Amino acid sequence: MSRDASKYTADAGWLSPHPSPHRPRFTLPPGAVDAHCHVFGPGDEFPYAPERKYTPTDAPKDALFALRDHLGFERNVIVQGTCHGADNRALTDALRASEGRARGIATVRRDVTDEQLKDLHDAGVRGVRFNFVKRLVDVTPPEVLLEIARRIEPLGWHVVVYFEAQELPELEPFFAKLPTTVVVDHMGRPDLRQPVDGPDFSRFVELLRRHPHIWSKVSGAERLSNEGPPGYRDFVPFARRIVDAFPDRVLWGTDWPHPNLKSHMPDDGDLVDLIPHFAVTPELQRRLLVDNPMRLYWNAKPYADIPGTTVFDSDMSRKGYHLNMFCMSLMKAANRERFKANERAYLDEWPMTEEQKRGVLARDYNGMISLGGNIYFLAKIFATDGKSFQHAAALMTGMAQEDYAKMMLSGGRKYEPGRKGGA
Ligand code: 0GY
Image (cartoon, rainbow, N blue to C red):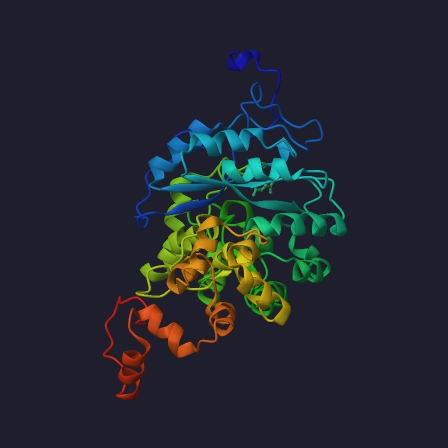
């Protein structure tokens, strides 16, 4: 269907995205992520929600990906726009088409099924958005939102929240209760006419200080600024205060295609050129644009390459859960007897992977650690065998226990970075 024949007409006065943004003068660090943007429609393919509060012009995935390449970004985080309600098809279509270069934030209702959540995850969704801006949505009660947050938490997802600054005092206790990371859109929409160190914005800074699970997007210059383009200078001190204080909990995004702007349509190149004014060193720029979004959305782990070390983080804890619970069961004498009587049969009572079971049978402690076993739990296995920590440590370093003991008594062994068990 041609554009003219579209069944949707955008709202009167709706501003479409800038047709030809300039290439930024600021060179983005390699791997930069635009962590707040949307896709709208096309409406004829992905209908706008009947309950929507606005009708935009279409802003399809191809236009977003072209902008990504033009500005110099590597990846996108696409946030479900309220004009699509809880129908995430335009979002998941874009995520799938991105070939792993986009992650998504969806909108879900309380009746979402586990299967639908799994489909969203497979498409690349890593969070849900709770919107408290009344001009955009009919607000969902907090107890329902909390229920949704508890459903998505086991998937490793987080919650993105959008609210007006005056709502913060009422919302803070709710944010404090959320079991996941919470990302605030556009710094909680401060009034930039107030002083940056005045009570209103200081309240927002305090929110982040008090709650280490809360992050902020330092985006929205074109929405919040009273001075306007191209410098958006009144926005800079606010974003800078947040980036300086919480460099590991900030994200940035274009907010393309800038829905509901009335004053002007920004040149996205100007928005990128603003970044070095509030993230003032290459280090801060890399954290804001690469490290933080990669950690949150692509599960990139800065500690994954520590030589010879497996860090027992939440992913390893999930992976090794049943293995570690089996180990704990050996605390009971009756269970130890049953295990010793028939190891294989006892292991088959636990929903562990075959690899984990083989690791136990072979007493391969390094193998078990790589499969999510934690040495404090694994200790129950060698204790059941009547063996000591020294025995296990010798096994893990490939030495006879006697030689290991001698080596330790004579002052330990020389540090060799990278040796398994040597860190
Ligand atoms: C934004 C801001 C707005 C809109 C939405 O989902 C949306 O409709 O987020 C707004 O109107 O302030 O971040 O895109």
